[in-house]
Length: 401
Image 1 (cartoon, rainbow, N blue to C red):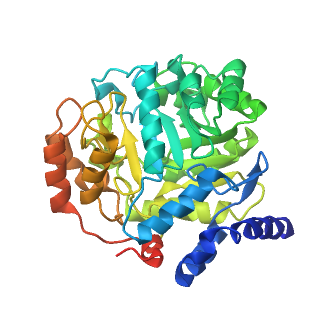
Image 2 (image 1 turned 90 degrees about the horizontal axis):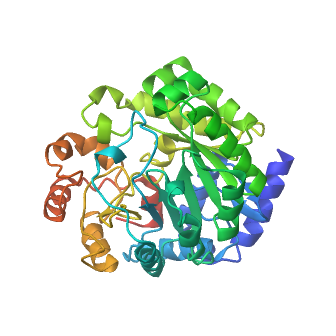
């Protein structure tokens, strides 16, 4: 406990020198209360709250604070950007949607241009997703072109291809951390869910290689009803800690891709609350890795659903969507400027929502998909008619109405 207090005090001394003290007092008090459910740590001499926020002190963290101040003035900036750099993947996971997309990967120079434009918009976290990003031979070159003083960079991977040499190259290129997907502590279950015989060994080897290279290491997992019911998710967190993970990211099943019509995978509010409570409990215990439970983070008591509001997703061929799980295209960067598309999307996603947009609207979306996406005209029409503007508590305290 004493060690935790010392760490928090060190962090406070840094934060008070920033313009974070200019936020409304009710917002700062809210952050203080919620901080008990986070676990602060140090990595490469910087404080880490979680993998989806920039470490501090850093230029990227300063941009995050600036973006939140801009949000109060109704000038919304996409803080978090995910980029599906390729749709290629050797796995065939039970819940994935990538195989349903008919997109070609963009050339290196086009990908780099998009990253520059994201940074021009003010993005402070860039996350590479896929498919499997490591299948792109130019991934290190692409990462190296990102201004690390503006954006923290993470990469979501199955760990396929995450060799010792590749991990070192990624670190050298400027990558902050990797998020390695693992669906079970049991090899047979993991390989079955991934539909690939060596997926378990590759994931564990990738974790080791990433740790040894100095990368921040998160392990992501999808918490199904069965895993919650049996308590296996608790075993998973302990297992992740033994592997050396800095963080465990808990996701809920989102009805998209292969499971877009499977109502039974959707968690109940009670099950989401159970996953939220896991973060609250685990992050108070030193012996476990940090837990980032999205059913907690994206609840109405915290930030809610920020897709299209402060979260932007770029697909492999340049379509711009609210998030990586919502196949609504608001335009393509091959045809329009990113800033124009962002404004179009942000005009309809003009506040964060208390509930996941995709979970609420997947039935309508599944009926109107064309080649994996809903076109910009229908996307605008859908979003204009179904927004409830139930602003989550984080943003209410910030002053968003």
